[in-house]
Amino acid sequence: MRKIILASKSPRRVRLLKQLGLKFVVDPSDYHEDMSLAMPPRNLAEFLALEKGKAVLKRHRGGIVIAADTFVWLDGKILGKPADAREAAAHLRNIGGRFHTVYSGIAVIDVKTGRQVTASEETKVKIKKLSPAEIRAYIATGEPLDKAGAYAIQGLGGALVEEIDGDYFNVIGLPISKLSIILKKFGINIF
Image (cartoon, rainbow, N blue to C red; front, side, top):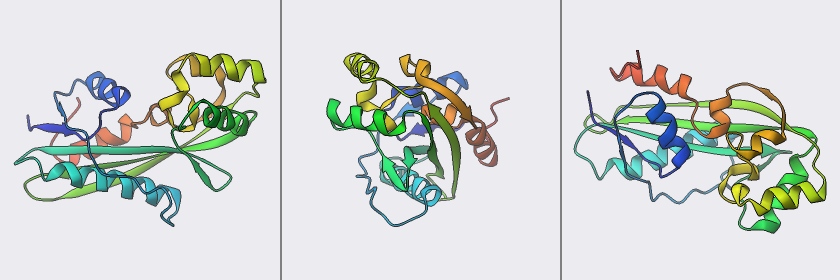
């Protein structure tokens, strides 16, 4: 099997790739995301994923690079990872009781040929309306501080989710069904 390089240090993405039974190395991208680029959210997610992948591509002689980017979209704005507890509380107040959209972009690049395929996934999520005490208690766990939108659907934050329309794994940060379709184009079959 071809060498697979994951251009991410996200423990969630690592776990999902392992779940697919893939053997890979982790080489986090040092690309600095510019979330202010004027693009539709799907295009932005794909662009950021591709740029992350390109940054890692230069450090390898062969193999396939997998890169991804995930963010929450609400009212025409991106809710990224909160900088601190105060910003996490603001995110949770804003998304509580209503739907928001989680976008992930995926980029797969062949190191030798430069061939690249990008795709994106969109999932609607509704978080239940949270009381100030619930928000404080959840933030005190530390879980929301490094998650887009300030919650982790695969962790304690799953108890906050009232409804989901779309790919659950996309909300975690890597839409594995879409990824498996792309990998097949590079000769890597999950099954």
